[in-house]
Figure 1 (cartoon, rainbow, N blue to C red):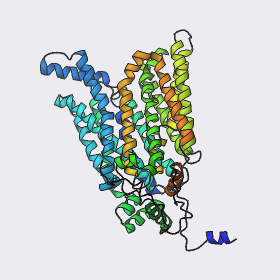
Figure 2 (figure 1 turned 45 degrees about the vertical axis):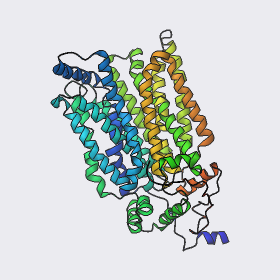
Figure 3 (figure 1 turned 30 degrees about the horizontal axis):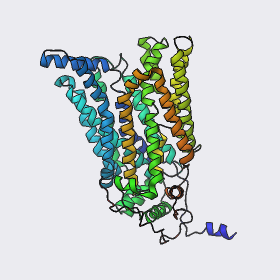
Length: 519
């Protein structure tokens, strides 16, 4: 009875279950449509019009120099057009920490929108200017923008979401990425914009979400955690929380933020270099590196690349292949949407294990199907099924969940540096697959998918043994779990941490020599 009376102490701030308010819903839709949608759209926008764009490269070169592009130079130019996008994403990831710490999460997204509009205009007017160089340059710039948005949006939404909705809202960026891919596939159909006249418009459409976000995002609040803990504006943070939660009493969350700040004082504001040498965050760092490498090196882009060939070999007519590709993109969207409803009930860890397990199995069976497709008449249809099953597996876990977990297992001071590391690994792995897959396909043939199966299996085992479940926990509670993984003792339980002046374990020997926000 005494414990019950203590629990109902009227002086204690009441912790409520968060709800999806209109403000939270709208800021989620605005930030993901204006940023994440662009990322997905630009992943797929050059796939369908590739033959027409390459013809434009040839025509422009012929007009200038009176000779056709050589086969090798044409290959180099097109490879740059495709590969500079993920390379730009890597460079964009390196800018995340300095920008979000100086101008905030919302401010970074607004600056990013301005930068996104410029390449959209350049690509849309490339035929008029008779310049293929502006397309290549624009792909680099739009990649930098994607690298920023792919890290800042999950951070922004994760810091604003109540803990019971953090998983579902954290999956929203990936959902809008898949919708962006699907819309690029639809617009890329030959009879719409995937033709000789329409492809500049197809590329330029990426600027529309940026303009809409630039006009609407200023009306929504900045991250309350950033406002309180880094800008030291408690009144503004309270007002932001009141808008986001739909009630006036937000003292419990404000207290939890201060507790988080108190418990992480030893860390200071970490740079990437400090993060990589800071023992109390060692397992968090290993987790995000392995998950992001597994996400990209598991072969998702290779499966998409190979899908058209698989469909053609299964007897799908050339004119229908693009519609089958759109159907595959639709499955990707639907399964990512399903993940939103499962992530806060089934948990992040289970979805990741299910996803990587499904992808591993699909890659093994796909290899067998590709090897025997010329000798067994029904094997091509099994190949199609494997592609769809692989997409389903990746959509429910490996694609969306790493962003959620990266937000959750790091605290305010280390989160920007963590996203810089996670984003850099993500984009470098993406770039690596795009660079070497053609060589793998030519050297290993159908057996290249065994390599992807092995990576899926290795990531599955790592998650099973090393990654904890984080659903329904505060940032402080997650921090306590990870402290135990790192062999440290830390008082971070938000329900028991009543006194902000409680002593924190002396870890000065673990503190980096120079703590700053620079690289």
